[in-house]
Length: 80
Image (cartoon, rainbow, N blue to C red; front, side):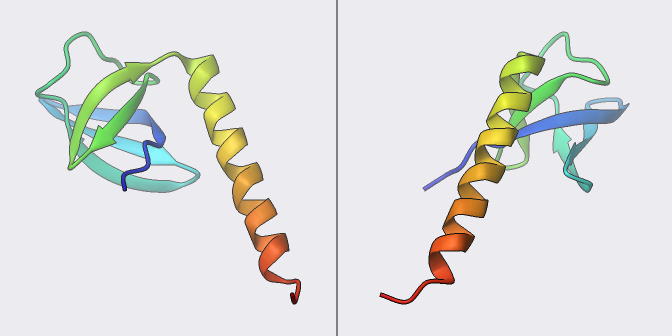
């Protein structure tokens, strides 16, 4: 299963971007996308940025993912 996490472009050098998610930075190829800039949010798969995502949608997706992780952590603390 793959999980698409919106990642913010913080640096671009030729066709390689540095992307950030909550302070974790990784490199991703931009060869599959046109018209991306620093500050844009993209979806990364197998090291490639495969789609550009609206900033509001990206931010909401990150909030929702954090909430799900928090809820899963709360559930693992309880005994059945």
